[in-house]
Image (cartoon, rainbow, N blue to C red; front, side, top):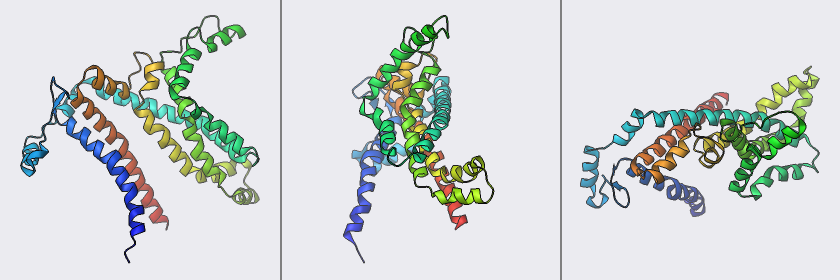
Length: 299
């Protein structure tokens, strides 16, 4: 039986994705297949939709992928991709190592304290992202709070060089994206059935062994969600490496910004964005299919 309400509920998210993802993606893809030009906008479209199917056939017969070939010929781009993936991977691991104990402590805290702890995790979002990054510049600089405190305590004799290094980038990224790791893990652990741990102890497991055999596997969905929420945006991060990183910190977000606004080479910049999208989307799709197959095998 046809249900219009069900159809509306299904159509709303698809229309949202069509308007805010698919349409911009197709526009960027079209620009990436265009030729650069000294004009406004700075590219020459190769696809003429006004010509109808004839224009589409002409576009496909003379498909221009020179921009994508250029990305493979210049070391700047693939080294930036690799550097971004490395920084994102290390930042995700650090966020997991720091965020999991925090989420576990929040889930095991008394019920009257959990809303307060949750608010403390969310509290940084009440401040502007740029202000928080700029504050780290003041903390990590040679005359910043951190160096002054270490000098006063006698831990160091000369100020440490932290700002404009990869260490500053890791600190800024972990600080910024740590709540995205904590919240899904906390949500998973908070719903976990405590009787499972009691059963594990009754069967002879110690507290540590019960944690590794029961808590960690059951928290896996939250860990996976947290890793995705951190890794995906960090790969394309621009603000943090620009403000906290040095010239040696090369990430694809900075390259993308320079191509769009400094070089005004929109076709190459669009090709960079398309390749970055596929680098992120394809592994996620493959992972989801693997998870779906595992669930089907278990059932």
